[in-house]
Length: 349
Image 1 (cartoon, rainbow, N blue to C red):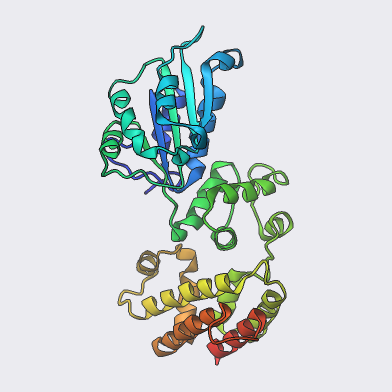
Image 2 (cartoon, one colour):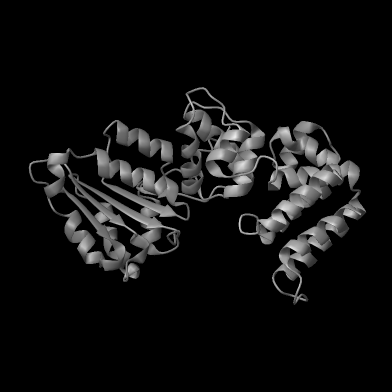
């Protein structure tokens, strides 16, 4: 099974997060770490580990150089990388925000250094929020060098499972429902996800479960009025419950913007539609086809029972229409809160 705590695209020469961290912890250092991608979480972990652990504190003043891309030219990177350490085995050079290097096209100048790097230097380039173009001469060279780490955004449908694995790796428990609750509310910014989860650990003992009450108290996600409960209520046509949630959302638009709510409902009903046209409706197959935890299959089955395929198509059309209205199209006066109430009524009638 794929380890969701790594987002690397594994290839012959591309390092995974686990491989890099294992090497660092065993002091098997590489001369170059080119860390790139639109998910900064893993890039920060690797660069912070190198910054804090490779050298002793007494060695850092002469042998650790931290530079920022916006102030740099590529020639300066080479100049620092070619310096020998003073009274230390290693010289560490960390380039933060390397994607902001003004003459980024001149990264080609690093090609000769990549071919023969200085053994005593550890050069770390943090190229965040972007992916290096692997079609360029430099891209091809770094891609085949063994020094490249690609940190990709985790897929939305995998985020709940990622949260579960993260919580378990820290010695705590969490249910699939609460993992989904966190992923729906926070989104796939892993640094933010981790920061929010860490708030709860302060109030728990190892082995405790990260439960709804703890999430509500420390992260501020209502256990009764949230996106997950809304989709469950609509799926089951629980009129009282969905009216209560819609009313709460209408009064708390800052925390529950309509654009996000509509997006979540859209994704839910798209999956219900897929379920209708899936021949093999066994739980295992549906979980695979819908790309959801098996725990949630029953919610989509409930939705399919209460909304036939024709009704689901109408719901999807409604969601597109109200999404446009919430953004100002064909609507000049109705508030998003009122639009949400109107939408919920039309979905269930």
